[in-house]
Length: 103
Image (cartoon, rainbow, N blue to C red; front, side):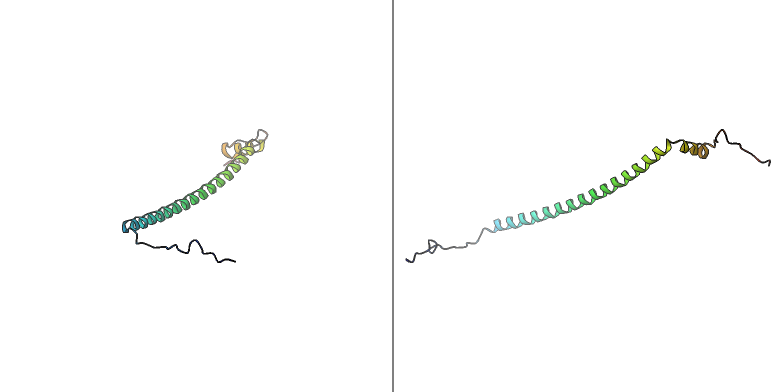
């Protein structure tokens, strides 16, 4: 088998010193990007916390709404109307006899 030379054998890589202004700008850009990512992470976290708080509040309001709905349904019955009339208005059933002892 013939010994072939690699086509990259004669290639030389030479590193030249870069422009100092370009390096400073690149570093400034990287730092600004890191700060922006940090700010975005902070905002994202605050949004998640606020979203969870609103979800908890919504769940509590749904429970309160269900309780109020039960109260509304209970208020429609004759027994609850009689209880409200007795407790709040001091009314009694027409068939009830009230006896007041002499003071």
